[in-house]
Length: 279
Image 1 (cartoon, rainbow, N blue to C red):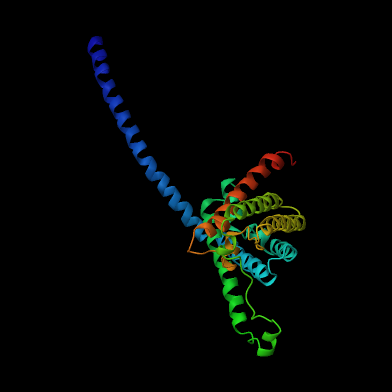
Image 2 (image 1 turned 90 degrees about the horizontal axis):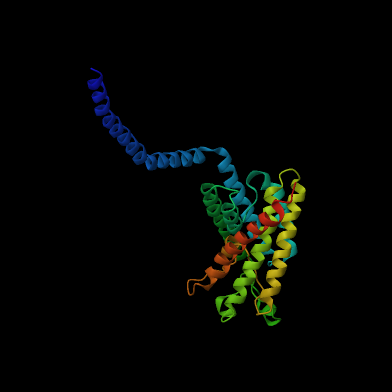
């Protein structure tokens, strides 16, 4: 009887092993489906979140204001400084006041923001800058035309401040590319500190404002040597400045790719140098 029992036990072991293997295969095959369901659930919860919609609204308004000031102020760094200070004080506690797709991507790469929120930020930032251009264009179209006498004295018809055309920097594209990259990197370094400062909003606002002032001064000074007077360091604001052109890919490389690369580098450098030393 002992032998039979032992034999029976030996015969049942493979059955249990096969059952365990089958269960393992089933769990492995269902893992991708579980991850997909989790991702869909996360997106659905994010869409329903009022906090997300408030943040998107804040980024839209903030970028609209920033692009409007850049156009109305002819891109002068001092005007942009106070504009960003005001924007951070207004909406910084709601969304972080990125108001720049390059900053958002830098924050995404350094895990300060999730990909779904980052995508929403980029969309509304571009829309906010585009609305600024449309709004100011509508006001410009309502302006009185320049009279003949004024034209004789050299007064030109009013026009919105815009980025230099691609033909103006032909053969100097790499200089402007690296100027935009450098400016965006300096801005991102400052904005990384802004996003880390949650207690003193005034200090955060002036950190961001002075950061963009330094970044624009450096970028504008760099491009001025090659005959260009405009720096955007913001892919969304570049839309309002009519910087992009379908005739060549250089405007997209200069005003979209370069700021993104610079912002990622700026955030990483901040985290390596500053974040570990701040207590």
